[in-house]
Amino acid sequence: GVLVVMHDLNLAGQFSDRMVLMKEGRGIAVGIPGDVLTERNIQQAFGADVRVIAHPEGGSPLVVPLHPVSAQDVLDGVE
Image (cartoon, rainbow, N blue to C red):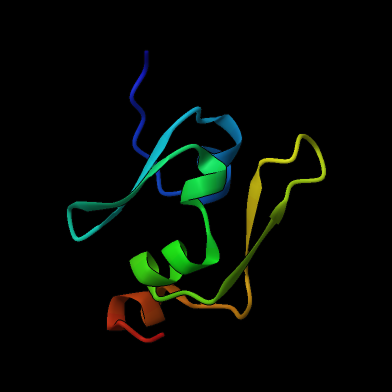
């Protein structure tokens, strides 16, 4: 097995067999990508409003932000 840490949810969802979604150093969801990458889990972890749809090539979860967030917004904690 291989352990990889990444912040690109779409890449992780496409190539992972199992995932752990973390918030503040704690796992809040564990399982297969389709069970972990849900709108509710992503809202809980990042405060982001997203839609999760099936990727057109292969069906893996594809996270789509509903409105843009700048890097400064993230640093400022703006949701």
